[in-house]
Amino acid sequence: MSRRYQEPSHAPTISRDDPRAGATTRGHERKRVTQAHLGMLLWALFVGLSFPAVGLLSDGLPPLLLTAMRFGIAALVLAPLAWRQSDGRPGWRTLLLYAAMGLCLAGFFGTMFWAAHRVSALSMATLFVSVPLLAYCLGRGLGVEQRAGRLLAILALGASGALGLAWAENGGDFSGMQLGFGELGFFFGCVASALYPVLSKWGLANGSLPTQAGLRTFWSLVAGAVLIGLMGAIWERPAALLHMNLLDLLLVTYLGVFSSAMTFFLQQRATSALTPGAVTAYSYLVPFVSMLLLFFDQPARMGWHWLPGSLLVILAIGLLLRRDGQPSR
Image 1: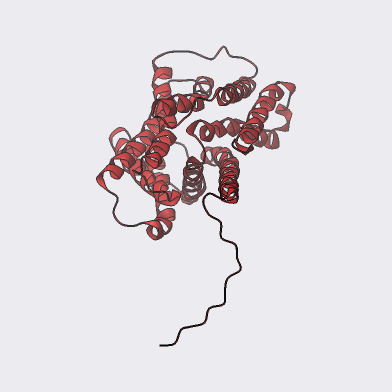
Image 2: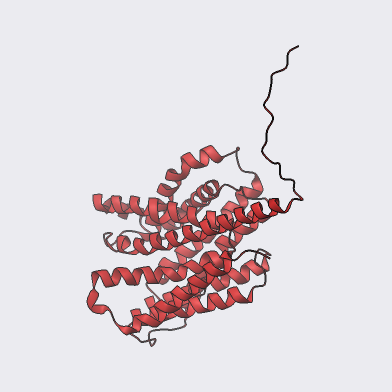
């Protein structure tokens, strides 16, 4: 019986006890963290660019049903990726967790649209600043965040900057800020928004969710689309969707692809490498992107009062990048 000749390999083998193996692992982990941060920078850009598109939609369209359509389009876009990554039907624990994540999305968008007619824009912007801090606290409760005073300080700095941008947007006046029933309802929506990445991280940690970001994004969007669609069918008039024109359809498709599919995918990919507090900290960049768009459209509104908030937000994101970019001890 003849043997096939194999040329001896001269490539060095690295055992697990070799220090080079640890260096390789640390280098791979730093690369994943860097990619996650770059992805979240792109996330902030996509979210910031979505607001002008929303403003172009026709008046009188049902917002919850439009959101369900966006999520449905986003799920369709991600369906081929989810099909390739899928190993079969999710188990019942995984389906329950997807349902909880979809409930978080429905809770946030539902309370946001409900509060839009009861709460001032300044109050909503101010309350939304709490989402990263809420994500950190909820993550600590579920054991997916470590005690990190430095991260808390960075989140507080970013929150101060976002509040400064909200103050500048309101013409340097906080007198429109109120605390009432509507504000309380929107705050619970902010809690739901903060809980979404926490549940994703918790599901990854205990093995309930798959490691593939596309698969997690697809199923959470499907659950969110179904729940938000049910809310819209109950509270809104589905017949109002018949008033959509071609521009509305194109805008909803654009929002579904970029503002939903891409942003949730980038967030899910970052969740596997970053903590919920770090992921949600990039929401502080969204008003900064909106400010740049405002200056491009209305340069006359530029003024010094935008500077403090902008500098604080940029400083907070820079410190976050520097913190996670340092090699672990």
